[in-house]
Image 1 (tube, rainbow, N blue to C red):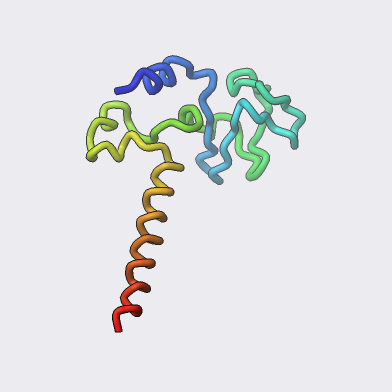
Image 2: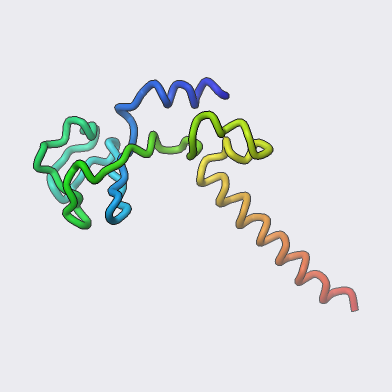
Amino acid sequence: MSEQAEQAVETPELDRYECRSCGYVYEPEKGDDKQDIVSGTLFAELPANWRCPVCNAKKVAFANIGPAGTASGFKENLGFGLGVNTLTPTQKNILIFGALALGFLFFISLYGLQ
């Protein structure tokens, strides 16, 4: 496992938290403009009466989903899957949709074989 992944696990203060009710993600780097929470405010430092800006769920309805830009999933499973498990969600999207676009181009090129 890379040092970056280990370092990300050791810095939970940068972790994002997702609302289990609606899927809203609180990111400490952005804060919450709707409730005047400045950027850089950690989730643990949010007021006890803070609620989800989308569905108004309480703070206890949020789950830690880790820092942005890291591979999703359990740490012990990142070594499996021919290296695909270590890709970030953005990299996975590029791989999937790039392969679909390439397959479509190959399919369309068959019309040139008359």
